Structures are given as structure tokens and as C-alpha cells.
Image (cartoon, rainbow, N blue to C red; front, top):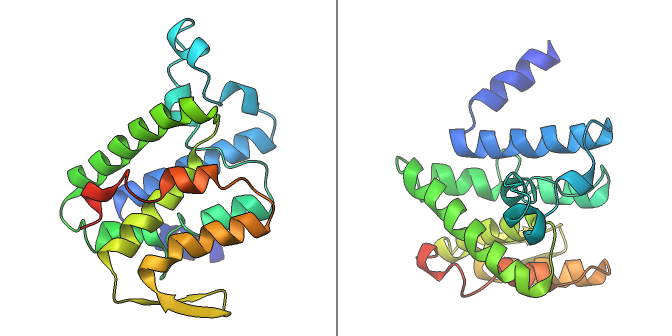
Length: 189
């Protein structure tokens, strides 16, 4: 019964958000079950362009690491629930404009891949989620956001609060910077 309810809720989610979420969950499950290795997924320009392993251009956006806090933190911003940014963008700013939403994903992915080359980044899924949060926050500047029940502020400050939280967890902020500011300005208004 609970499985049917979960499936019904999942099928109500807009198509792009549903597909991206399913791909992330399935990729992570395949790694957890040892059907795939992260070494088969990461972005490696040599393997992409010399060995023609073109799937790496996509799979590096689908793997967030092994199941754990980091994975669930990232899924918080992708998985469709009432206050999830990917779904809110697709249902709000991009309602009826699925092709534009897909183009935003592709445009962001290409730019992140190019900039990721400079920073030697191998997995860019977190940068993509930060991009989604950034675009949502710029399109909804008057929305007040409650950050983990601790702080309340206007939406445009959310990407920066997430970067600070990432820094507190001891993570590099390079990925957050890649998904934030400037790169995605065309989609933020």
C-alpha cells in the first residue's frame, strides 16, 4: 500500500524532475549494489574524447556519492516534495516550457563541464543542484526561506547559505561556486 502511494506521488512530479531524480537514485543504487563503480561514472576528458566513453558526460551529474548524509542532503534539493527547487522551477517558472527547462539543464551541464575541466572536478551533480537552487532563488526574490529552522532570509541568499553550510561540513566550496552566480544569469530572470 505504501509503495503504491509513493509511486502515485512520484508520477505526479513533472517529467524532467522525475527523470533526473530517478536517474540519480538508480545510479546511486547501482553503485551501492556494486553493479557499477564510481570509476565508471566520473568525468575524465581523456576517456571521453580518446576512448569515446561519452556516457561520462552525463553520469558525472547523476552520482552524488555513496548513500549517506551528503547524498540525502543533495537529494533534498532534487527529489520532488513541497519545497523542492527543481520541482518548483519546473512547475512554476518553466510551467508549460519543458523544452526551456531541459535547455537550462543542458546549458548548465555544458558550462559546468567546461569549468569543471579547469578545476579538475570529476562529479558535478552537486553543482547542478546548486544551479537549480540559484535559478529558483533569483526567480523568487521575495520568498522567505527558513534554513533548517535556524535562520530565515530572502531566497536570493539561499545559495550562499548553502555554500556556508558546505564549508562548515568541511567540503570544498569550488562546486558551490561553480553552480552559483553569473554562469546561469540568463535563466535567473
